[in-house]
Length: 226
Image (tube, rainbow, N blue to C red):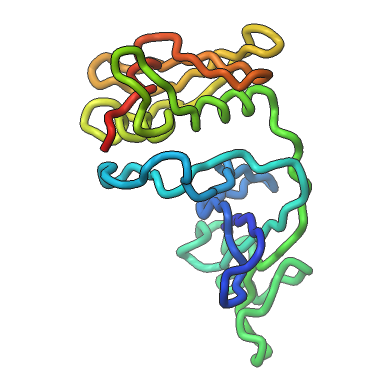
């Protein structure tokens, strides 16, 4: 199943998709998407000169609290569904299925294949303090003594360092409270033969201040001017 968050329209009238997960697995009546972030144009640091594969044109941030239009889409064929699912649903094309979330693919024939094509407004809750802390660290552009200000934000730096032959992405981001306003934010990655390790920062969700804590955090906090 595909899940898309839509906000506004493109110049020719099509819905503007601002976030999506195109590989959602439904199991036992439940599903979960990968984290859905709001993509916005990068206006905070230069997009020129970065190595291919490092995303700097757009930045990701949490969706604000409010209602958003969610589009669910799915097809009933071998490319989308497992054989046992198609068997349980009466075969390919979903022709035997009925319900408000289903639409005929070809409206001018009586035996059209059916697809899931469902749009609904859903409330997005306020983000958690942990998510706030991570969202402070990812877009932070820090200054390292003796090197100056980083050419990119921490997320771009992380993507750069984990795109090479050495470090690889691991479990990703996590935040833990150290006080009501201070959080320890870590990025888990695989450092070649050394295995799983973390880069760590502190984030003050009251003041917005971000500081690196360990050596990996310092490394991931700076890149040269491309």
